[in-house]
Image 1 (cartoon, rainbow, N blue to C red):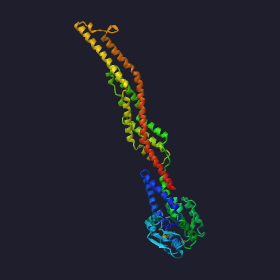
Image 2: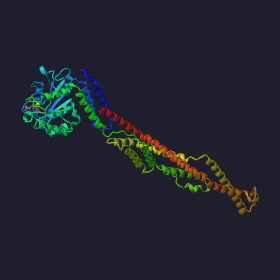
Image 3: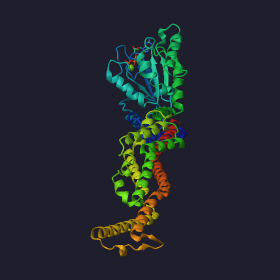
Image 4: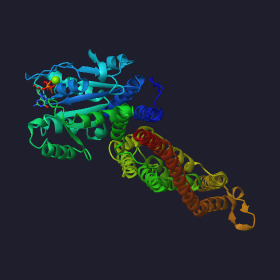
Length: 526
Ligand SMILES: Nc1nc2c(ncn2[C@@H]2O[C@H](COP(=O)(O)OP(=O)(O)OP(=O)(O)O)[C@@H](O)[C@H]2O)c(=O)[nH]1
Ligand SMILES: [Mg+2]
C-alpha cells in the first residue's frame, strides 16, 4: 500500500493490506450465501481502508467528540494555543467540524476525503509539538440539531482516534455510553476518555473520573484510562498531550483502527462457520434414504416377479398360456418417484435429513445454505432415479438365451400334439360318420404296436409340454431371484452415483466454499 511519508515502518500497513484483501475475497465468495447487510458492511470497510491507506500514515486524525458544552472547542484551542474554534456559553456552538493541523504537508487529500472545509494550521512555537496530528473539533453528539449528530456519526467511522470529552454533569449520559462507547466497544484501542471542567470539583475530578472509568468499563472497554483536565486552567493538559503524542508518534493509529474495522466486519461474517465435511456415515444414510424413496426393495421383488411371469408365459404349457395373459403386467407396478405418490416427499425427506445431519455444528445462515445445496438438483435427481429404475426393469425383463430353445421345443411339442389330435379327429369323423376303414390311417407307433401314431403324438406332445412347462419353473425361480437381486443392485448403484452427483457434490462444493471463506475471514481477523 502506498505510504506517502515513506519513512515509517510499512509492516503494519502491509499486514493490514493482506487482511483487507482477505476480507474483500471473503465478501466476494460469500455473495449470495451470507447476509447481504453484512456483506455490504464488509465491502464498505474494504473501500474505506483502501481510501484511508491511499492517504498514507503520515497524519493521524484525532477527533475530539462529546456532549454539548463539555468543552471540546476549549480543549482544542488550548492544545493549539490559538482560539481557532468558537467556544461559548451559548449552546450548541460548534456546528461545522474544524480541523486543526500540525503538519499541513500532504494533508489536503486526507481532509478532502474527510470532507472537512474549515482547516487551521498551527504555527509558531506549538507547531512542532505533535508529529502529523490533525485534530478535529466535532459538533456535539447529543445536539438538538440532527445534522450535528449525523456529522459526528459520519466522522466516527473515518477518524483514527476518538477522544470522548465529558464534564461533571454529563459523564454518565446514556447518549454517550449506549449511543457510542458500548456500540464501539470493539474499537476500544482507538478511544480515549477525558473528563473536563475538573476545576469545578474539589478533588480535581478524582472521584468522578473513577466513576466515569467504571461506566466506560461497563460499556465493554477493558481497563479504561480517564484523563482529568480543565480547559479553563490547563490542569491535566500535560497528561492529555502525552496521550495524544503517543497516539501520533507511532503513526499506527490509522492502521490499528482499520484493523479493528476489518476484524469486526470479518467476525460478523464469520458467525456460524466451522470446518465441516460430509462424513461417510452421512453419505451412507443419504443413499439408504434415497434407495428407500426409490423403493429399491419393492423394485427388486417386482423385477423378479416380472421375470418369472415372462418366463412362464414364454416357456409354460402353451395351452394354458392364454389364461395367464389375462393377468396384469407386474412391470407397471415398479415403484419409484413419479409412479408412487409417496416417493417425492420421501426423497425430500432424505435430502432434508442429510442436510440437517451435515449442518448440526453449523450456525445460521449455513444450515439453510446446506439445505439449498442439497435440494438444488432435486427435480433432476427424481427424474434420474426414475430413469434408473426403468432401465433396471428393462434389464430384468430381457430373456436369457436358453429360453429360446425351450420356446421352440414347446412349439414343436404343441404342434405334435395338435397334429395328433387333428389326425385322430379326422380318423374319428371318417370312421364314425362315414364308416370308412380307418386302419390304414392309424399306423402303429414304432416300438409300441398297441398305440397308433396320432394318439402317441397327442399324448407325448401334450404331456411332455406340460412336464417341461412345470420343470422350467425350477431354473426360472433361481433366475428370477437373481434378476431381482441384480435389479436391486443396479438401482442401488445408480442411486449412490446420483446421490454423489446431485446431492453430495453440491453440498461439498458449498462446504469447501464455506471453509475457504472461513479461512479468509480468519486471515482478515488477523
Ligand atoms: N469551568 C470550566 N468551564 C469550561 C471548561 N471548558 C469549557 N468551559 C466552558 O464551557 C462552555 C462550553 O465550552 P465549549 O468549548 O464551547 O464546549 P463545546 O464542547 O465545544 O460545545 P459545543 O461546540 O456546543 O458542542 C464555554 O463557556 C467554556 O468557557 C472548563 O474546563 N472549566
Ligand atoms: Mg464546540
